Image 1 (cartoon, rainbow, N blue to C red):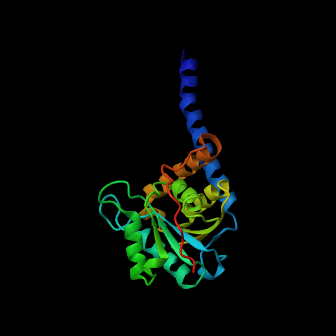
Image 2 (cartoon, rainbow, N blue to C red):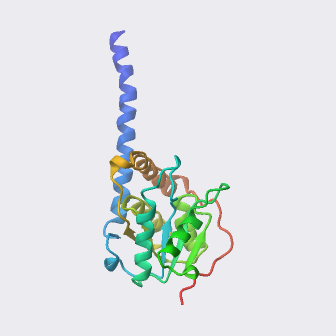
Length: 217
């Protein structure tokens, strides 16, 4: 009886080990896909017609300032002003009343000196996968630069490669892990979901819709 009880406890332990292995394995898979494609300086990023600024809000769910927001906007504005891209797509969530990431991002970018006519809002970027696929299918882009923090760019590049998009990343200034533990834990789970979306589930964006012309002149 004691032997049976001891073996019973091995099951949860084995499952935990397998789960951790899958999580870190997916993260490593994504990192390999993004190797050599993420840059932390504007002048080193290969030029592209458009940058996709991945969704974020100026405020966190608890009302505090979102530490990821301003660095991401600063990186996007610097990229545009340096002439590395000709337009910006701000892609984020606008799925509920009173929550509008693209409008908040566009407003901040305009304050930073980016012309309004060079910023397009993608209101259906509910997930990174949606933002990536819509960049090609809705906005007609085959080569893009993603602007976000390093961990997020890597996942976007992985998804882009699976969608036939040539992609690079400009890494915005990161936030110390101690100040955003939930975000970093959530990102590890998001890596697993991304690998499953591409290789198992064949997940599609929630919405596509009509084509949008991007002002590149």
